[in-house]
Amino acid sequence: MTVELGRFGVWHPAQKWTPEVAAELEQLGYGTLWIGGSPAAHLRDAEVLLEATNSVVIGTSIVNMWSADPAEVAESYHRLEASHPGRFLLGVGIGHPEHITVYSSPYTKIVEYLDALDAGKVPQDRRVLAALGPKVLKLAAERTLGAIPYLTTPDHTRQARELIGPDVVLAPEHKVVLEIDDDIARSIARPYIESYLRLTNYTRNLRRVGYSEGDLADGGSDRLIDDLVLHGTAVEISDGLTAHLEAGADHVAIQQLDKDGPDLLPGYEALASVLF
Image (cartoon, rainbow, N blue to C red):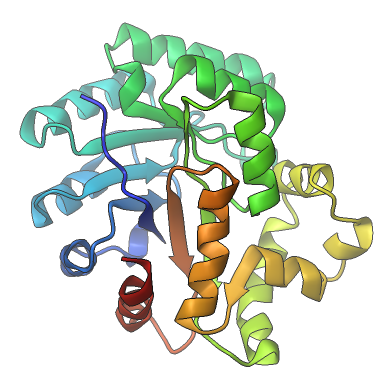
């Protein structure tokens, strides 16, 4: 049973999810709710959201291969599948060398982890892989339902689709700020992006799609910030999100950044009114 992601979903770090928020976003029409960060192997965070909702898909983005034992992850997957059939999607990934004490041969680690999930009988079409570069994108196409790129643009989506072909799920994440003032929007977005610009996996990929060293310096150029964090009215932002679909994405995971505190539901309501 292949999961149906819908055209748009919501991505939040695990600590921002509550059962109430998940239930309201499901009612707004979002197809998948993504748990960001590094959910633990027991997958209790996903279980809580599954229990609070009725039909929306719950995905992880991502279970970290270095910290979550694949055998335990497989057991947890089967527990969730038994209780909520067809509604959980296991997103896994390698993380970043800057965050891991022991980080060697990452590609080999990914292959071994997927082998372990195979041994644990996690179906290929019920797992997705965090992928940015060509080698891991191809692996995602060969060994999983598809790829969940993070911190990308429609240009990357277009290149990824050409690489993996038409029959593999491609579900990028994109950040947004519902703010029409350019300076205010960038002041919200830049601290988030600056933290990612310290991670070589992302900077390497951004160079690959055409950004210069100047774009990556000093917290990111205005061009880079505007491309990675859409801002404006709900209609303007929806146009930017839809650009991913036009470039070949099947689904876009929307991450709204904090503007006026932790209550982001009004923003997702505004986006839902134009996306659905």
